[in-house]
Image 1: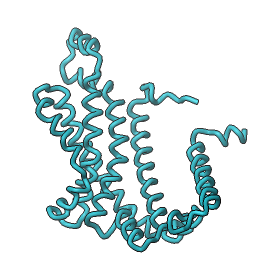
Image 2: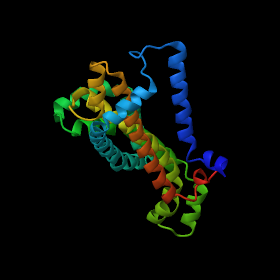
Image 3: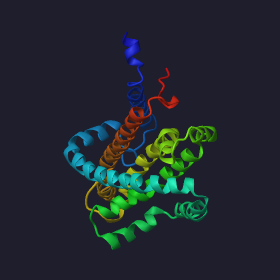
Image 4: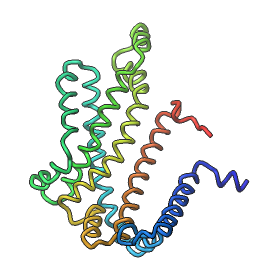
Length: 257
């Protein structure tokens, strides 16, 4: 029973993290890597505990900016993707521009948001939105375009209206692809929020990383990265839980051992 508990799917990520920490510590000892290059894991843990109140307070600000950008992604990205999927004319005009926009480095244009919107939370929200927008649009377009034509023909032959066809057939079949895009988007939104904090903010995990980098405080920098990664994991799991509730019938939700 202990072996079954030890190898349960819920514990496997933690076991892998523990193994990576051990390998990290061994590599530092074997290769004698100086602390000013890579700090030992236990120094990072001690800094994480010592700075926890500050890191927790700053993480809320980063999380709020991330959620704001992710919310905008859902509100704007999915409707735009639906229009693209159902209109070849709109697709021919808009889709190439969306692809072109992804070649623009967000770090390069993030300072413009500070100039336009000031040093509040809004520039960080816009930065998070821009990084998370494209995956949602692409996945949603592919989801609606991959709906089985035979199912659509069947619904028309049975006298279903366009609205009924959309809610009963098109949307359910597109939801797995939409959620795939949302899970990618929410992690990229965390990166976008930090990019916004890098270029113009005095709060958030990105600001902590800048301060730690300026002071060559590597343990604090690694501790902030741990918190930042945890935000991304928690938000990813939250989206995954919503997906499990909304599409429990899909093959991706079947438990495999």
